[in-house]
Amino acid sequence: MAGNFGAASWMDEDSLARVAAVVLACSVCVWRQLGVLDMYLVMRMRWLCRWMCRVLRVTAACAIACVCVCGSGRSFLLPVLRLSMRVILSVALMCACMAGMVSWVLCAMWPMRCTHVATVLPAVQRRRKGPPLPSR
Image (tube, rainbow, N blue to C red; front, side):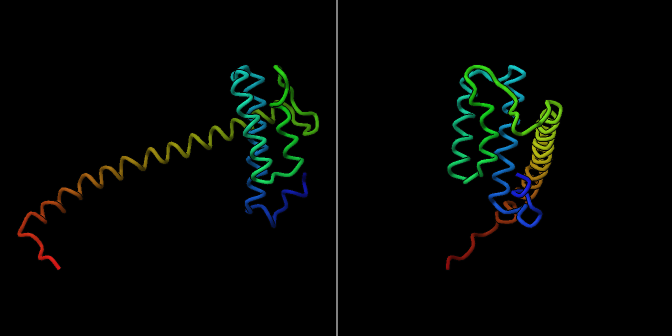
């Protein structure tokens, strides 16, 4: 698996798909361990993992990571990955923090755009209230 994450190919689509598959599988493992997900959601995540493996051509090493959501009724940490619960929780927390920061930035930028449009648009409309423009 270490060979798949080389520095030269870090930003190509296959590498990003591998990272997404591993992060998704680890997050689902954590959520299932904490009892947050019910079995319906686990089955939906299992379908998503299979789709990622098939459509995004994720390698077999990353497909193994999706096994943790395929357990019948109980979740288990995948021994092949050799990840401790603390590492998985750290990854899930980091992803949650990054998603929160992105949403905060988007929410912070949106009111400025709305304010800009609300102040500029009426001024433009006032200027156009003169005689109509000649048709071409």
